[in-house]
Image (cartoon, rainbow, N blue to C red; front, side, top):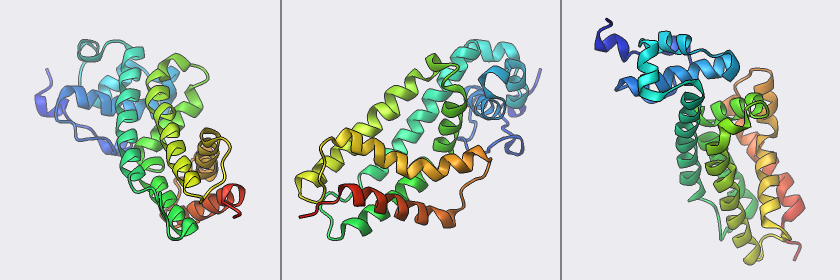
Length: 222
């Protein structure tokens, strides 16, 4: 039988190394599963590979978290929760009464990219949703509920405040929120498709470009 320290080890050299420290078997399994699912996809991942990565037995995984379907759902739920927490921390800084609309929205967009979209949780979710979402939509119910289901309405509400204050002209804040988020993610999708991690030096450029394009469409002309 493996000793407890071996069972709790997460070898970051084999994966992302971005998840919370494994202080118990459950977290060790979730860390390992996140790495294996990211590397192999849902279909290609196996309980055996996850068990080896986590340093536990197959039976420990079944006892702790059930079969592969349930394990994937739990991993998605946990990472979605962390990603959402980062998103809402940044959202608290949204400029609802800006002195300089473009400058302040650009700064907000940069923080949103850094702390809620380009962060490890956001990258993991984006990759898995884009590669696995169409094949296994039932495995992403938690992501749909707590990801776009809460983030887009929250952005829409802030944009509506700007419109109410005379800064923007919006017919449909919900549509504007989706378009704003799409502009932010455009270049990130390209980077992800070619396996490139977006350099920090490019994030401010992305934020400025997305904000400028958005305001050309929606800034008040009055």
